[in-house]
Image (tube, rainbow, N blue to C red; front, side, top):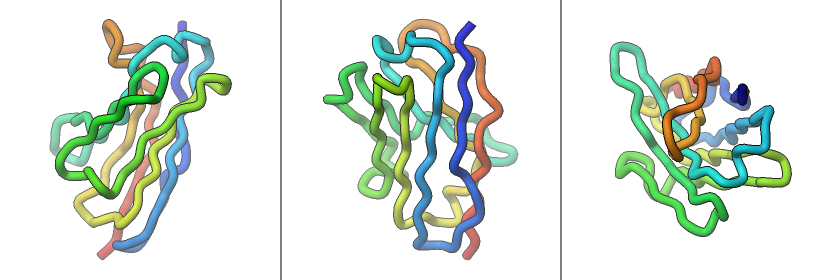
Length: 116
């Protein structure tokens, strides 16, 4: 079973930046559309960015477009999320997962906290 491990979160002031990483234990990543999700306290998990299997196509939620950049390295079975100009409303636990077929088992996520 593929395991997902997210990292890179932390506490940052508004306007700051963070780079999240997600590593998969298996090589299924290279053929899958991948996405970054986030879940804030009391809210449903939402998809914030997605990237095609080749990395040539990306798409973002309106709330993060222009501030976040998703990328991937299939040789490392990894996907990344560069987050700039962070806002307090970006505070959430961030997760990665596959968008090809049913979701993989969710990892523990990585906490991002943005202070005002």
